[in-house]
Image (tube, rainbow, N blue to C red; front, side, top):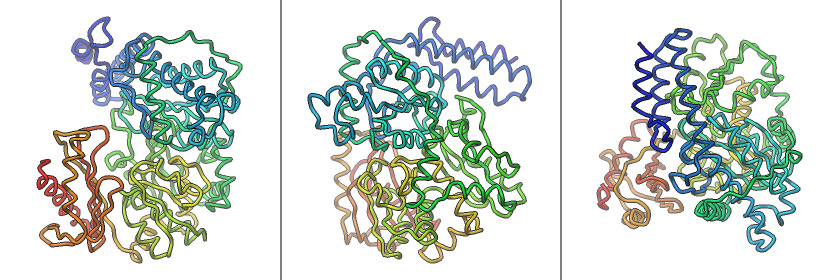
Length: 575
């Protein structure tokens, strides 16, 4: 009987009246497994659902009552602060972090050194311009967002409240409304137990390092004090915000730069009978916008998958991975239309991956395709920007088109110097934006761009990719990594031993001797070989791991590059 299994799981994972000692998400994951193994609409299915709701009620109580410091010290990075719901993210901790941001703006009146990065000159200006606030589909998102709003309005800062929304639409809202900043309660693609707190300044892009450092310092100071001031929220300072409408307005404004006529693309799609689009929302925030994004016109050729609210994501890791793409592929293969586009989007819709039902196209390839399309089909001229760990396919295209390449370290904030100049900015982890759009990665602009490609070229993405590869060459990127016993400065010191692999050094790749022709050291060590294949080794910033990024010129060549990377780590004594 499933009831006995449920009782056993509750007993195994919970310590009555002790939130800190209870493993709520270990319990929830096991309950989701029970639910997934039960027949829909069966009594077992209903009992599992009821048990999940009961477990989440305990999580909510922990969110409301936990006044302990976050289990893991608050640290703001490129994508903000992330932690476990209830254990790290509580009303108490979120209150203090929101106040830390307010204090950063208050301090502008005494020290304006952060003003250029923030795009705001004084606290009064921040109050008047206000903040855009939203959340993704995570459990407790609206509760935590409401607390942020109470802190902001209690400090006289106006709020444009977008409710559940995506990172890209909130970024667009900052630009259209000329807000001072945005707060998005999202941990992006992290697993179901995580919450997140993402901050963007007035430029609407990922916050600069000097900003995230200040927020981290302020937050840790307040948490160490442990005392929150009484809240005095002002509901009169809250305005409702349609973030998607802001996004639509921004796309229309940027059409002359990126060449994407959003309304015409929708008209073309709804008028075409020979194409089908499948969108997998993986239960994330994109589900609240997707029908409106397509003009609120229902069509049997527009299919949405996993578009129901579910903070457990059905038990899957909510990322645009090959494993998660299988349902999209299966759906497209059953369709009769000759032109097929499938996408999968992560919870806050800042990452997207594509397929035409035959092949999967990640951002390593799609970003290069997008650049070629805007340059050659839309007649736009300018450089391409991609992070150093991303495929060199775009490099080959840019060189062939006699355009420049901007290749910074990993992190979307690194594109700030070329926003407004680069036709496309993208990174290997499935994030993209285009000229004239937000400086934040945005799945929606990727979707509209892919749709325009298919409709205007009358080609599936795989066919278009094949044509570009026939001209500029085949590139096969991959990534991996290994756990190591070192971290921090000790790991960096050991990795310095890789300097022996300099330009001119010959290394063994799958039994073939290949010479290193270029070394890039802006983020780890990227060694480019004579056939334009490469391998890159960099430490993880958050875990005792070393990450590998490789790119071969054939599918089979990837294994040799991975083996070479591991051999290098062995040579310097790390493995």
